[in-house]
Length: 158
Image 1 (tube, helix red, strand yellow):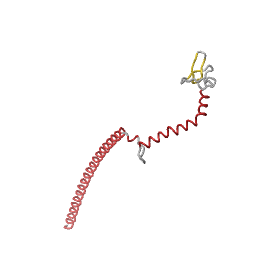
Image 2 (cartoon, one colour):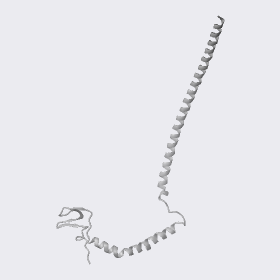
Image 3 (cartoon, rainbow, N blue to C red):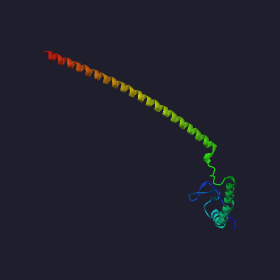
Image 4 (cartoon, rainbow, N blue to C red):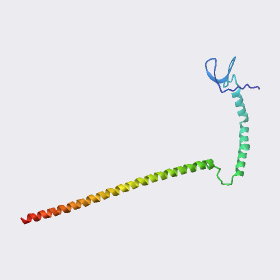
């Protein structure tokens, strides 16, 4: 049984105005998905129906078994599969990122320490001002008491 198979990735306009995948010829358009023009759908169906079981068995017996044997030869028992993250390129990038992160953390810590030192200096200055003000108040209270004491004495003499 002969089959007619055409293929195309181009969109063409049919005589009735539809846009379809197909080929433009001088006599008209051959449509890829039209079963009157192309037997690909029929051929695909026949091949899959008749050979699907063979495909499954072949895949399982040949390809999977070959993969399994290769893995068993190259890997030690219980060892994890090599990961893509163990790639030296990724290790270098990771190390560079770690260094950059560490540098940024150091910069921020230094900035924080400077800010903390400024706050401590400001606190010490304010405490000193407070102590001076408190000392002035004590001195003024003492002077006031002395004045009141001398005023009481001078009243008592009259």
